[in-house]
Length: 243
Image (tube, rainbow, N blue to C red; front, side):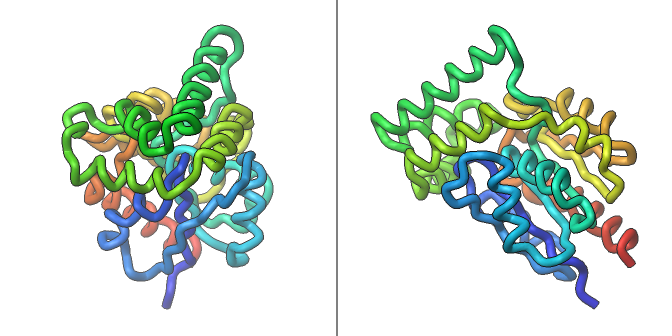
């Protein structure tokens, strides 16, 4: 008997490359599909597109921005989601005051680099804070990340930056989740640290928190075996809950 299909939702400028390292280690019971955000410029629009093409009921795993899209899917169609995994992400909107202004400045600076010098140059800058510091010279990890970004345009990057700056508050969605939930991050994730995920777990009653050692924000690529093990346990919970 087949399990429910699992939709894998990538983050900012990402695609199947983020999920490929873990897929060989996941149970063969499920069909896996990687979502493409196209040229959407809001998280809500990304969620609408996902639901339009999704099966009637499914499991959902999102990484980074993709996990925020997953929260918007849960907000609009909770009855269709039978389990959710939220990886290396956050739930709060852009902060007000100087912190929010600083975030906008950093994001728009990257947008300008992409427009002026190309997406690959921007990605080289972006990746510095997104993997474990010890892996910045690991070409086998860094090159696929740069190539993944380079497959998308500066225009797509601008639209996804817009979506993140105007992200909704996901706190109420986390409080409403009543399906098997995994919240996971790399212990050295400098962008979305473990404390952020602990706060999410506090809101999502019954959620399991997994912190993966020796991994930054790109945990599925940095530590695929450990991430797959946590996701496999979550998938097992989903099978039991939906039997």
